[in-house]
Image (cartoon, rainbow, N blue to C red):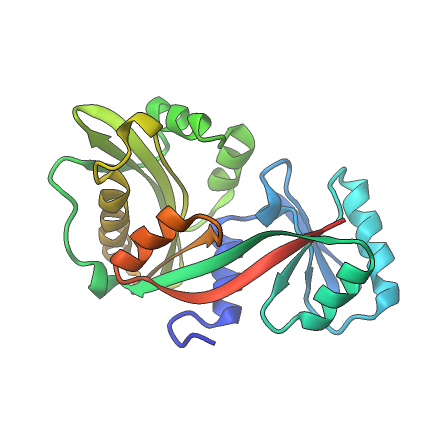
Length: 239
């Protein structure tokens, strides 16, 4: 357990800064209607003690939304993980959560390399689309109700990268970091992280966080180089 971002707080920040279109309780499970916005806003989670016979109702609720049967498994939920495995669910996308105190990311981005703004400019939407983040995920960003921004990065006098940052309490979470392939390895992602920290601090945050797939080694090296540490992990089980 991380003192910087405990599990319950991490879950709350994720839900607030990357929200589902709607949620409802089916017994002990929280069912999310993602409206095509990806696994994080479509996965069910256990919010109370559950029994094996609670699972069919949760599966039916997801099917009624035309979503695959998908559960997010957090640390400490080994029993649910094993039960779903026995029911034919496979592990999908193990994820790591990173965080750092804003004060450890105090170095400013290079001058005129990043531009926080909201709503996103057309060039920002185009960069996200290039990385596979289309209208359904942009709608997730629109649903976030707290302070939020898009951070556009430039390199060699061209738009180079984009990310979304939103705030919940004193924690900011960065989502949707994309750097166009032709502009990689020029410091754009580094500058976006620094700009995110500065924006977050200006809006009252004390912590910057993000989540990344375990398999994304280049991104994980970047986050570690900036002093960010692993504060949590989860994975999905999909039937």
